[in-house]
Length: 435
Image (tube, one colour):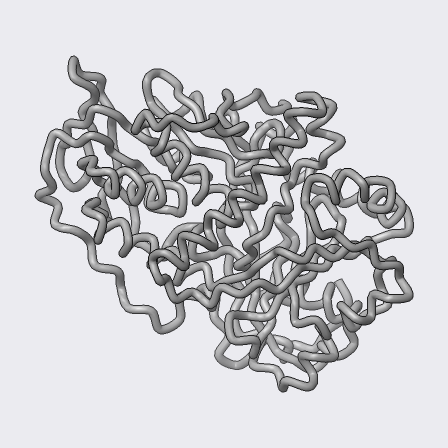
């Protein structure tokens, strides 16, 4: 790590998310919800709340059980990106599933982003949603060549994609440290904690019960469905939706088969102090998010009112506490963006996300329990969308099935072991440096 002054951290530096500063606690529903439930939803993140909203809107009796409080989990801790850039590359998906399925996955990722934008409008969720585009910067000359080779496929799958050589990248980013890239026109960003709370309120208004501090301790099959045993009481339910994502291991033994098919990784983000508008314009002339082509990517974007910068990097890396993490993340960007130097960091926080064996999210059913799991770092668009699609499936809606409705694949042994995972992350970082 470069030698940086200690005052890169502001005097009031916080290890809590910037997004939740000043937000009042969310009010739980009355635990005396009507039973039997049509659907019990376990997990009040984007996926669970989206499923509950769709189900309750159709008249179903629904309760959402959250082990902690709204705002404590990963949904209020992301970096705020609303895009359609998946972790899985098109060539990797093509090799696993064939060209037709790979293209459907990429095309439906766009539908996921559009669904969230429509949901925000329809329910008037004030979360700073803005269409901004996104610049994906090539971290090496080889990475730019790969983008250039993939350009026809990306345009076919993503629509408006512009290749930008290194000589033109200054119109997007105030840095010469990258090797050109591509610009996506339709990507958006938002304030994730406000979206999270807005979804919870919308689900309640539709008739769903949202119960906090209601951890599920067991699920038992009964003749007419299931008995869901929670800290808030026992509830009969005809169907159960598991939307616990990276927290799945915290739940009863019935969840373990699903947990073994996901890799859980820590993610990190920080917020800077307010930045003068002219300086922010030099750092990001387009005022749009920027990420790079590394597998463990680096991401930077303006916050909801474009007064600060949000940065995310070093997912899965175990290199000290949040104070050290903030210095390392900020150092990476300050090395590449000269106008960042002298700016201080006010917040750095962590969350967790889940990766699947094929690097895309899934919905499905196991042992009679329905699930939406494995956000793969795309929780805002994909978890929200797939919660809705799973709800539509439970309602028996007649529409084309989602391409993400398929069993969770096995994950490699080296990604399944908590002891080997840090080595795997370092291997990806090494590969990025060599490519």
